[in-house]
Amino acid sequence: MALTRVLHECKSGRAFLQEFGTRLPMTLEVSSYFESLKSARRLALLQELNTRLVMTLEGKRSHALSTDKALKGFDVYAGDGHWHGAAAHDPVIDDTKHAVGHFFGLNLRSYGVVHLTSADQQARKHEHDMRALKRLPLETLRQNATKGRRVIWVWDKAGISFQQWHKWKHAAGVYFISRVKENMRLEACSGFAFDRKDPVNVGVIADQLVGTSQGVMMRRVRYQDPLTRQLFEFVTSEHSLQPGWIAHLYRLRWNIEKVFDEFKNKLSETKSWASHATAKQVQGQLVCLVHNLMQLFEQRVLIPAGVLNQVEDRRRNQRIALAKKEVEKRKDVWPTLMKRLLRCTQVSVKFIRWLRAHFFSPTSCDSALDSLRVLYAKL
Image (cartoon, rainbow, N blue to C red; front, side):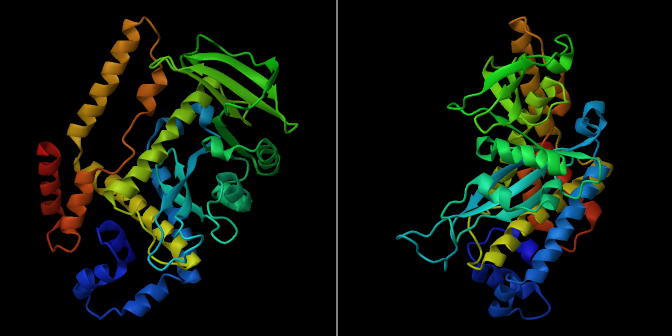
């Protein structure tokens, strides 16, 4: 029932039960439905289920990050915070019902999503990303990575704390990549040698070891995007990868923003379901679960059946071709990683609408897939 609620657009829990509760063989009471959202046992079950599902997705999907030798020993995630509007019965604090923060991680190989934690609403009205990250157990940051594997988190500027990065690197093999803040003072100490002729390093201007105000050394990569010619500075605790990979991994961080767009605009998950802290985390886990199951359905059913969104694929390929043409027109070098790493992150809205339409239908899978083929071809 909870998955159904995420998938279908309903303004409230009572509206959802009135519309979909009648399709069940038993009567679902309002009180028991909402009480179940507070269950710590259900939350633990959902956490384990999502973790295993993301691992399953990674094992089934072929991706450039999986095949490239440079990243063979790494698990790579993009992380960020995302906010839901306050629940109807949330308390009013300082004349305001405050939004509810969730912190998610996106596996950049499988595009499976994990819910890391919900923001602390007791001590802080709007918890900062790094404060929330510091609360997490090391096991959560490592996401069940096997011993010896290194884990990279790509986070925006809100995820910077150089001392904490240093601790995570040496205590758990967890590394971070982010962008340099405008007011940040970094003193260059030495440079790293890198192969400027390697296609991976196209756009890299400098690769340096820098001192920070927090007393630890970090790595800074200066990069000019060949597509836009915009200058970027990245900072990281990871020192072994080619500098071009640091820039490209940060480019991939944008994929988690696309997932948030899916949550908000395609699944209409914009408001908290309940006021209880556990219930809020359960909602975050359930949104991840719906996304991950749709990704798994694509892998196990759509791709083997040859049901592909060819219209969207053509549009994406046309955008890439135009960008490449513009780069070559300027006589700049096209970054080869761009073509290898670009793929659709979001679940298609056509697919979501189709899934809603057939969710309770007795239609056979083959007949339902035929209708999706028509949707992909014409709409």
